[in-house]
Image (tube, rainbow, N blue to C red; front, side, top):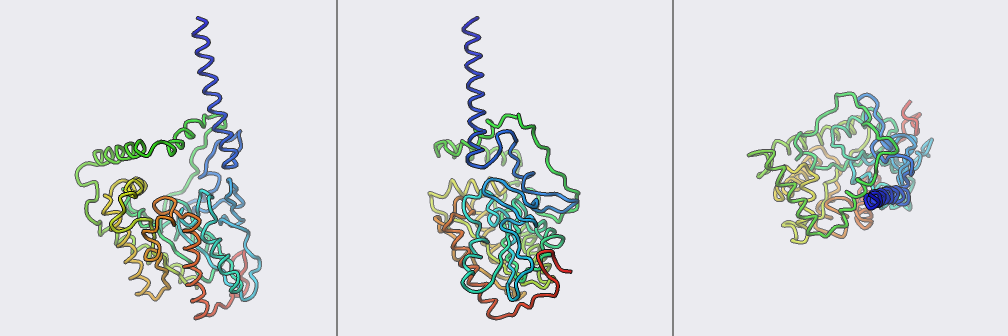
Length: 366
């Protein structure tokens, strides 16, 4: 009986110690209070009817949102005469939700500092494809009247089970857990990143295989899905048109990844992680073919509409040192993207003028 009680006590001590370790680790690395539940989505995002924006003045670890819900410092109010306001629109590659490096919009502003007055806003929304980004632009972001809007789309969203669609449903915050809900399980799940590569590879490939079996015959894309590519090109055209209609210049950017064509053997595990992130429906070859076809579609659209183009894919693909995983940037990658964008912005400014509309400030157009 005594041994049983001792065993139960030992198990309880281990569980409590693990829970405390997880909470202290979250506090030290992410700035999350010991007496709260981490909820990236609820902390940083605000839902208002069908509109999804950053939550004004939200804080999470190194991430700071301003009064408009954009990542970064407050807007200049009013914008100084002759100053060019630039906005970057995209998903996690643009937002950099991990806060591990300065986001490339902030690095772009640093690049432009010696060339005049420029303000760069990061209006990215993590996990969102072009329809949601366009909706947020039309009903929120456009109010601050940027002169140049950088559009960095994520093609892999178009390989998921359901293609991106324009929002119609009223949004609600996901339910939050009470502060005392165990965090150790999430902590243990994240700690699998430290497991041996062979173990992580085995688990990932087993999950991909199970998804294919569940989906049934024909569920996995073994050939390039041209219908999805057409949706991507149509929606990219739509958001660029929406930007142009607000008297801003859309700058289209081709999507870059770490992979050579064909991919290096050392990158196959990372490519499988990309497959998992992309909804598990496409093979390795189809994922890379879709990225290349989306880049080609972006170039075609820019040429057809006369929009400025930054061909990041041509400059950055295959350079593993620029990416922390399949498509998110390392510090070197963020600086490279910022340099490519800065060159295009300065080219645009040399060729065009940007008269400031009367009454426009950080509060929006009057």
